[in-house]
Length: 193
Image 1 (cartoon, rainbow, N blue to C red):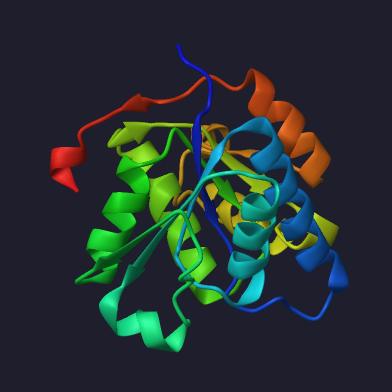
Image 2 (cartoon, rainbow, N blue to C red):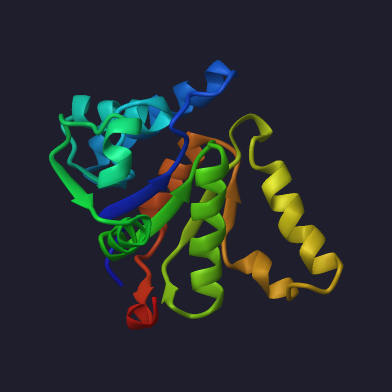
């Protein structure tokens, strides 16, 4: 299988209250740019989204931003990216992010990031795709999300195999190392999305 050439990153439109989150975004963007991995992201120039995109661009990398029209003003669309796609709806945004990516990385963020994380994990569970999903647990940020999945498994609402749908990694340097050996995923039944 081919290597990872395009990575969708789901992350916050805010930087959060721990400086480690923005620093992780900067390190990620720098690493992606240096590795020649195209960033595919939500298209905003604010928050961790903007930090990652700016760092990829500063490192000479390529950035595809995908933002729905109604959010372009709210999240202040990043006009400096390599390519900016404005979609009509949130769903068409998510589908485009999916289509343009070989793998997915979930970084610190809020409700929108949780939504994207659970949706892309669920799509994999439903065999709509078989692309790798990484979860970067910056400063323990992802522990409650992982605990929620474990809780669903413990109470019989999810199969234990759900824990194999994603890979939790503690640091950005470890994520960048993993991307070097991670095979690109397989398309699934995107027509069902």
